[in-house]
Amino acid sequence: MSKYKRVSGDAVEYEVFARKTRVEPLHQVGSVVAPDDDLAMAYARATYDEERWCEMAIVRKDDVIRLWQPGEA
Amino acid sequence: MSLSDIVLSIADNKQMLGLRYAEWATRAPSLEADIAAAAMGLDDLGHSRVLYGCLEPLGQDPRGPERETDPSTIRSLAYFDEPWSEWSQFVAANAVLDTAFTVMIESCVGGSVEVLQHRLRKMLMEERYHFLHGRSWLRSGIEAGPLNRAWEEAIEWFGPPDGEVAAFHKEGKLSLGPSDLLARLEERLESKAPKAAVDWKRWDSARRRTRDGAIDEHTFGMLRGLEEKKFAAASAKKDE
Image (cartoon, rainbow over all chains, first blue to last red; front, side, top):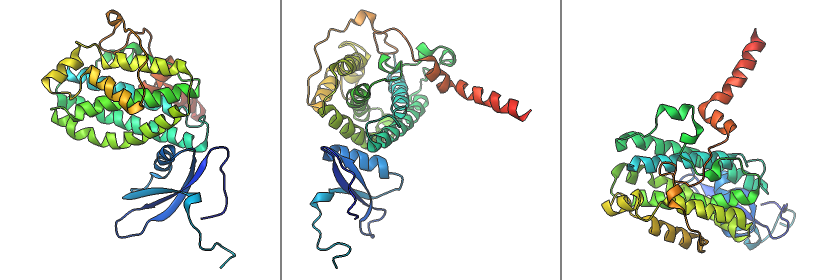
């Protein structure tokens, strides 16, 4: 996850995770910016639905607890 | 009026909704909203194809040759007659009309007609995201004009209390009657429809609307493939 943010106003950045099969772990496929969870779900599905994912999840970028980041390890 | 007429009305309306959504694919307030407009447009155009495909198995296809030449025979609501000029028109259609079509589809899936039970179920999963999109934008606040108009047209589209939707509900072909459809729509949108008396004497039972008019010439030409011919002629001349 990069440190780059493109949010403004009330918008929040969400990271989008997905996987194609049950045996693989969720991995980050991108991000969306939205003012609330509902719209973020709609945007994530619209933006990243080109693959046949068996699972998709979003998380607020601010809710991710970082242990360390690039340059700090 | 047969159940095919209801299905054709859903199909024509979803086709027009899909086209109007798609027109906003580069005009929405954010990149995400642009992409959502395009994606929802594709969804609804796909849904309309599935619905048209149900007409033959239902036993009656109400589409006649007049649909090739007369735009007023396309059974879509007046809300879709002209391209939307304001984002609030998009949001009102997304929140109210798209959800109205969804609750009618739920009524088909919950009814006794097998082809509709099976073929329309997947649409409901996709429509969940249209609903989230519409409700979220609606909560952010939009102008009353387009919103009230969308509600009025949704109520008209559900039909009169003693119309064929009510009759199909009694027969079990639809799981919801007009008042149930409206109640479910209000529940989903967490709001009451504005008070408006529908003049059912003016109601066109095929198009399920009271307003006159028809879809614009350009859109009708596009639906019929006539717009393509303009480009075909230009490229043919070039090759000469």
